[in-house]
Image (tube, rainbow, N blue to C red; front, side):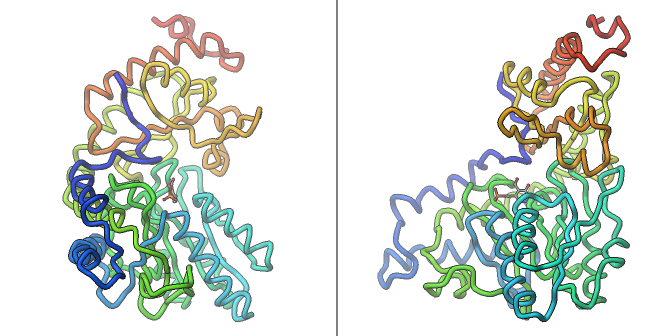
Length: 396
Ligand code: PLP
């Protein structure tokens, strides 16, 4: 059996999404900017797709949604443009982020920091959550931007973006949220709170890879990302990724339709699976369930390197993640676990299971058996796990 529980990394393309995209590769392949029927026959589907993306996040018509190639691009764009518009010009000198943003935010922030911008990295607490008060405490009259993700990709923790957005509005500071892990998991309504920029990525909600977007509020426009044409209102020139845009639109529509299922059925499956995992002794989950997106579990198995667990799972067909990167011979610990302040031996033991609306009960039952076997085997050979009850270590 093959089981895919790495849906925070990417998701299967919904068959309806694939079906919607297919005609735009070999039949309707015109460049939408050309002046003939091959071009114009692509227009209705592009328009419809854009409408679905606007509707999916409740964006009003006057605001912009610019299609990009991925969330990494959208995140880079926001920070670099803010640097050019506000920091380089000397109007402001400071931005605020959470310390557990995706690397596409953190690395870009480090880059603009090296160019003279001051960056505050807000800590997370022991539950992996952010205190909105910390945003208020760090804002100065020189703060240009606050960027805090909506849902953390590792823990699934839901950050209080509504409150943070409203604090930013009070202080007239721009607010960006990376909503990559929120779309399709939570209701997203850019009109229900103050948000100026919002990042999305189609492949995280059963759309195709290589297409993302940035929502941008009217009056808060960034500088063009790519110069050279008129596409995307001049913000991002380059021939449109027609199948990608159509796929993202369809995926957004499907994600909105499936939201109740995700928040009830997927959540229930996740909770029951988590209950079973937590029956294994010496296991820990950081963020309380009710403060997490419905599909994610980041769990530590004391005494077991996350990578070893992945190896055992993979051998039996189960795909999960550790969230940590293998840098040459060094095994890096999970950055979120480190930020939480987990003991050093626990920071290396985190494994992330992320479900989707395609996950089945049978798959979770199978995974549970595989995990239990792996725990017995790996704790049996673990040098750091000496405290397990004998009976459990020998698998009884
Ligand atoms: N932001 C978050 C929170 C993510 O989880 C990811 C992907 O893992 C990204 C950004 C980057 O997405 P993309 O692959 O579209 O660049």
